[in-house]
Length: 249
Ligand code: NAP
Image (cartoon, rainbow, N blue to C red; front, side):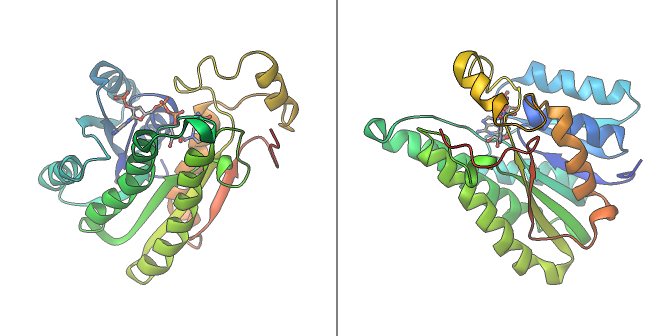
């Protein structure tokens, strides 16, 4: 029960990596705010799973790319709990396009959620944090090892790693730690079907541990970074990828 008594917001927790982290946080004793955009039934299922394990959770919708929604989410956290200990910025979107197909819409969709959304959530969360807190930003190994046709998405994740370090400096004196996790190829609804065939075979061949990741492979690192066990760690970008280095395709 490493997170007993802690209040944690996990954005984009209705499915995929966010849901895995929310479940692990609940099992570790945290009260989990399960944020989602539109999939209420999926978010309710995650809340039910956490409660079945004896944990506490509530689902709150908010489009994390919209400042008014983000503020409303954290206002609800304030009125319900009065404080916050952990923020996991996870809600993200990927659009893979060759540069000839770039649109302003795809650029803003990805940067507004993957970068602006993370910053807006931190802006609101710091108003609720107590004497110590942990922010965990879900980045990607593509921040350093971009796939083909991933220039915008990879740039958003490079920005996540940079803002992680910048915020660790800014918020360290207030006892707030900020780290990012860089998942590798992870089976989630977002990647369903993308890892099939020859491309998938290449990804596995480039993964020393020889398989795709699962959300449950990422969640223990998030629990560690949220807990006091990582009290001396901030400003770090940590890979959880089965050992992938230098994708090269
Ligand atoms: P996913 O399966 O598509 O799940 C995305 C989650 O984000 C869902 O809960 C979704 O909620 C929520 N969401 C989407 N747009 C939102 C918005 N505007 N506001 C609030 N929530 C929103 O994605 P995933 O694969 O788990 O990815 C999660 C994170 O890990 C992302 O930041 C992604 O970039 C990163 N990542 C993933 C991989 C991978 O291989 N899967 C690898 C590296 C990094 P609804 O269900 O309500 O739409």
